[in-house]
Amino acid sequence: MDNFLLVLAYLLIGVLLRRLPTMPENSGIALNMYVLYVALPALILKNVPQLQFSAELLIPAITPWFLLLAVVTSVLMLSKVLHWSREVTGALLIVLPLGNTSFLGFPMTEALFGSSAMPYAVVYDQVGSFIALATYVTIIAALYSPTAAKPTVKGITLKIVTFPSFIALALGLLLRDTEYPPLATQLIDNLAETLVPVVMVAVGFALTVKFSKAEVSPLLSALAIKLVMMPALAALLWFGLGYSGTAVNISIFQAAMPPMISAGAIAIMAGMAPRLVSGIIGLGILAGLLTLPLVSWLLH
Image (cartoon, rainbow, N blue to C red; front, side):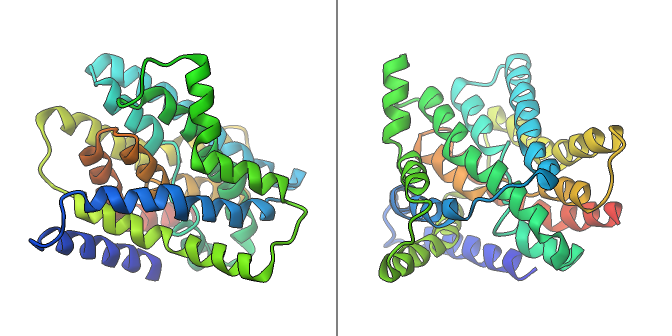
């Protein structure tokens, strides 16, 4: 619960800063640039060496990738039916599949399910959300960014391999068996810890409750997909196959997390419907105050 309150505090700071006449209009862009080029790569460099996997943890490892495919299919179908713009479609493809499975997911899991459930939450986050952030999100950002030229194989490949998070992922994998020097470790840890506060201040800075008519349907669809459809699909998958237990419960609970803040920052920096993305993240976190306890109660 403390992390929820912290996120709301950061969000409120951003909202209040927006009201200061001395704050430049592009402050949100500057904050997101810092996250994209500094804090997010630091978070990746911090976490990649800790990636671990074993056969007994297949359920939380498989679930986020199954949900990613389901969400991508749903967004593309809704986009065609509801005539969403390419910019909005790309934004939802980035923001919806990934949840806030570490900053909110870890403490909520420990508080509601106990420390014995934490390995399943970590695998869901690291093998699913985290790898998808550094790979899938990078590809979608390259394909759908309205500021990019007409996509070509060469252009997309270049965008991917030069994207800060992808470079950090490659470095992290190359240095996985290498221990960082103490000073480098401290620097990476300190920079990684700035990600959530800075992003949420930026989201608060851009947050609005006034949306255009064209933004209402993707906003409501996004919240329904992220907070209702995804945990329901995870439950349908594993309960339908006859599985139960802690691994299944935590996979469903992690699937119910509000949208990932880092993914939202990438979508905003790629120029994909920034007002809509800020609304999905901000309102998604507020709605999560109600939906997460409900999901936990149903699982118990």
